[in-house]
Image (tube, rainbow, N blue to C red):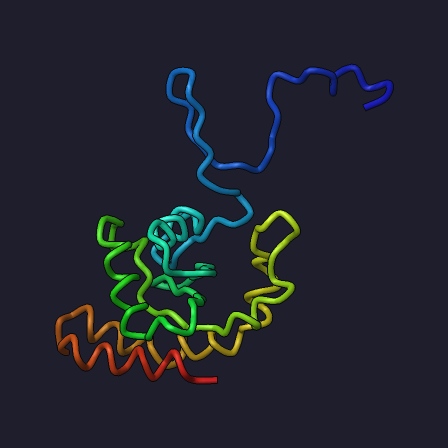
Length: 173
């Protein structure tokens, strides 16, 4: 800044990026302002989970949330030719190497047109706007599915019942 010599060439610059420095290699893994802190205290970068879910070409959009929740949820979209069953299989396959706390437990499919205006000019999701716009889905996930997920995680149901429940959640409006 003008007339503030201490601001010139600072030794440390705070960018808000999350990353690791290994030797001379810097890898950026997300933004501090996007960090999800689960109800168990886990810090999760949504970009990490989103990159895993988008690692194979099927999803056209994917945004992950779950702050103050015991599990992650995702808002996704894919071409009309992709069925919900294909989406579920894709999500399960892409996150198989993620730790349990970073896996998406519930997802909701949005139409391509619903993403209009939800991304910046350079293609980054406007997270606050997205979660505000689709808060009805988040409410359904929190209120309806949380007790069911506990039952599922304790092994008191089978995979068919789980898929049926999540299919119903995805279509709640």
